[in-house]
Length: 208
Image (cartoon, rainbow, N blue to C red; front, side, top):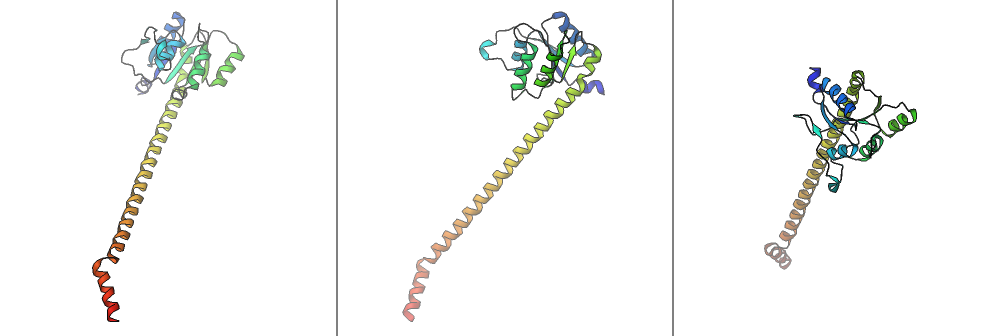
C-alpha cells in the first residue's frame, strides 16, 4: 500500500557527476519513486519549461519509462558548472508556477554558510554526499507537504471559480429582475395613455 503511494511521486534529480547521478537515481528507484535525471541546471529548467525557447538546443533528459511529467520534488547538486544548485533553487522559487515544488540541495562540502543560504532561499533540506538511503527516506515528508499544498491551492482555485459563478448568476438574476420591472413599468405607462382610457377620462370630464 505504501509502495503504491510513493510510486505516484516523481523526482527530478540534477547532478553533473554521472557517478553521483546514477547513485541518486538508484536510491530513488529503490524507494519506488519515478525519476528523471539531468546533468545540469539548464536541462532541469528545460524539463520544467522555464528555459527560453531560443535556448532549447540541449539533448533530451533521461526519463524513466511511464513517468508523469509533473514534478513533485527536485533534488540538485550544489556545485555544478554554469548554473549552480543555488541558482537553480532561486529560479524555481521565483517562478509562480513552480515555487511550491520542494527543492533539496546536495553537496560534498559541509559549509554552514552555504547550507544556511540555501535553506533561507527556500530549500527544504540539505544532504551531504554521498547520499544514503536514509537521506532519501527523509524526502517523503517534503513530498507529502508539497502535495498537500498543491491540493489546497486547487481547492482554493475551485472555490474561487464557484464564487465567481455564483456572482455571475446573481448578477444575471438581478438584471432579469430589473428588465422585468422596467417592462412592467413601461406597460403600465402605456396602458395609462391608451386611447380607451384617455377617452374614458374625457367622457368623464364632459359628463361633469
